[in-house]
Image 1: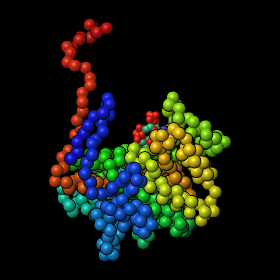
Image 2: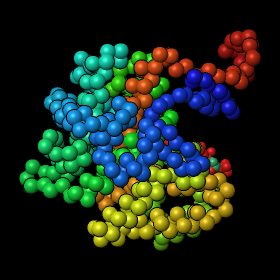
Image 3: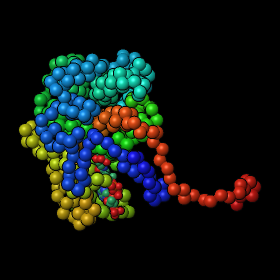
Length: 394
Ligand code: SDX
């Protein structure tokens, strides 16, 4: 089922595995969660419904979603002693480092829900993680700006709650902008799963050793942090800001991306699977347009992103290599519009991807043929040779 083949030196391509969660067709630009097209889910669902669909396999009934929301709300607070974790980090610590550390730390405070073979414990750890990740993330932002941590408010929706923990301050009333809530809801839905991507494969790999859910997700967060993966959304905005500062010289950076000696890549472009377009980028770009028009925001980042896309899509190098904007290319524009600081962009990706990671971890744990993931290799090192003592070495 899960074979491993070795390609060039040191590159192991973990072979295909079977899964019932997400289907994607890179040529046709199709993405479906449990059979439902991403476009319909983005249009009609809220993020908590999509969480339920990914983890339990069906869209919830009225009663099921009510119970699910109620259970998640019970777990939104962090154990008070966990707040001291944040004292140990420097103010400028990257929030992804804090996220992976604190998520792994959950296994020290919630030791009653670590057994991956006890369905009741698994259920509790899933709801705890879904509920607490936004709180952990918002606390990391408050730490970075020296503001007091804001407790979750359980009369708010999942996205409203996260935004109020991020931006409310004790000294003033806080109003959650409904446009920001719907934009965030859409972004979290389109990030929620993407079959065997790098971070999801990491969660499956670590979970296959019977590591608890918190430890497995912490490993996935670390993998997502990589700039070639989830970290790309942060890198896209840094790249676009650089182009703006360089007189919007889009052509110069398209040229640089084609020059192999430059090592520079157009962040937010290209994808291992999508070779025509990333359906999520299409959805996000449209949402970008709508939100910026509604808020009457003229963000130069959006303008330079569109110019860069047009220049690249008309360039032989990108056309030949089938390099198109991916999920990360426009997401940062929306995050900026709703006030999320750039160093939190990949954290938002992690909040979105959490239900997908959990669904895959659960599917792997429950598989009758589950075994520890143990890639094999083709050895290409030296053949057997005799030991040479130190004085005899050249
Ligand atoms: C995500 O797997 C998933 O599903 C991931 C994800 C998810 O939802 O989980 O979709 C999320 O990670 C999206 C990708 C975000 N990363 C970036 O935007 C970083 C920039 N993109 C790339 O580095 C690259 O396109 C990857 C990593 C996304 C894909 O890498 P591949 O498939 O290994 O492609 P490659 O490195 O083999 O490149 C093929 C060719 C090479 O040129 P040649 O050697 O053939 O001459 O295309 C070139 C590359 O140099 N190339 C680029 C490029 N991406 C690939 N050249 C310039 N700019 C780029 N962005």
